[in-house]
Amino acid sequence: MKKIVAFDFDGTLTTRDTFLPFIHHVFGTQRFLQGFILYAPLLVLMKLGLYPNWKAKQRVFSHFFRGMTFKEFENYCDLFAIHNLYLLRPKAKKALYQAQDDGAEVLIVSASIDLWVESFFPGIHVLGTQVEAENHRLTGRFLTPNCYGQEKVNRIIEEYPDRESYHLTAYGDSRGDRELLAFADEAHYKPFR
Image (cartoon, rainbow, N blue to C red; front, side, top):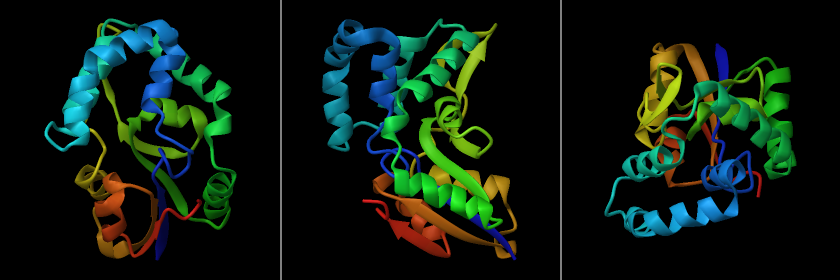
């Protein structure tokens, strides 16, 4: 039977969420704080469960990145990974590569934008939130649903529809991973803390 090992990214493979640090990395402190203050009420509503997570994330993303060329965005993703390798949990990184060495098919399933996750782990298959581009520029919208909660399971089923043909091990650390952990044959909650 095929073995698939799925890792969440933010908080599981990393020490914290990477969405806001990525924005800060690209735009610097002043523009980051201006945008954060502008969207603070929306982010509070999201944290209280009164505004959808994906919608808040997309609005913040659009504010900062709409109109940027896709190539420029890719370059920022690569630079972000290079300058922020310290965010990776050493034990988590070791577990990921050990699973790969053991012959498992390794996935990272994340609500983060797939491009910057791929920059941290080149060659590892990433199921993440994808950004939309038209005429080589970001529209500010997501091409796929935000890969959070049930969407993580949906994306795995889309990639691997024959559920009986594989054993799934999953690693996660937050509310956004509950459905993935419940779907797995073997689940590890906050394993690298």
